[in-house]
Length: 360
Image: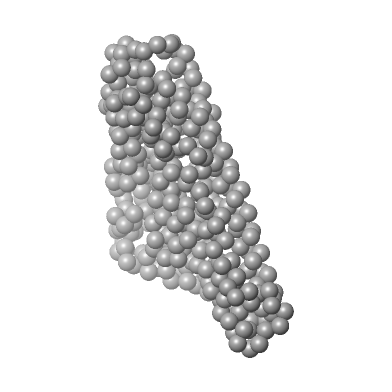
């Protein structure tokens, strides 16, 4: 399983690091991480994040291994860890009746569906609150500022807040989002408002339709109504067994992604709730300080322009949370793709949360 591989990789890195007498910060620094090097290695060792190829190659080099050797050790260890579980599951399945097996599969599908429904609803509520209490209110104030410019402070602040270096894709993309959003605000004429409606209206945009995705294995069981038949001939029994195999294979293949979503989506929800409360209060105080009516960019003063840049970065972080591809996490059967999706989501969550907390 993909998550087993990430966990095994982290454990191997931890063992080799200790054998060389390095702490987490020392390993991260030697591997090319900037600020937050120790945090990055801690996430790796705890199975929460798999670095990109370049970073992982640098870590392997510090540990006197090639990237291929490090990956091979992780694959071997994760394979050893997962083999007994698969064997036991297979033995239990062989002893099950078709009816019991179908009931077990359906129960697992409905349990996943209920879990994702609950997580999606909480995400949607937090998303709506962050949109209404911070994002839209900031845009309303920003559109009263004439001649607004892109603050030069956005880029270095994001780097310092995130604890990531310039090679971090999520870090760079958050910068790009900040730049683009700042330019839209400068254009005025309601362009930024339209962007807000397009990106953030409708609640849980990133989680729309997920319950249908999770329930997909049910379709494999529904074909022909074989599960509902009381009596089946031998051909129908073989067809039912094949349907059960397909449904169970889908469940097994998507289980790592499902577990990842159960960890990742609540973190996105927490960040949105933080934005709604803390950034919402901050933009309210800023609005009261500025007063009513329009004002020029120069009238804002240094402190006002700084706060404007802070709110742009927070807005970009909020938008960036929608980059987490929850649907692909739930549906991919490809191990390497899942590794990349989890790593991308971890980076988005970390960079976005750090950028927000550094400002409010």
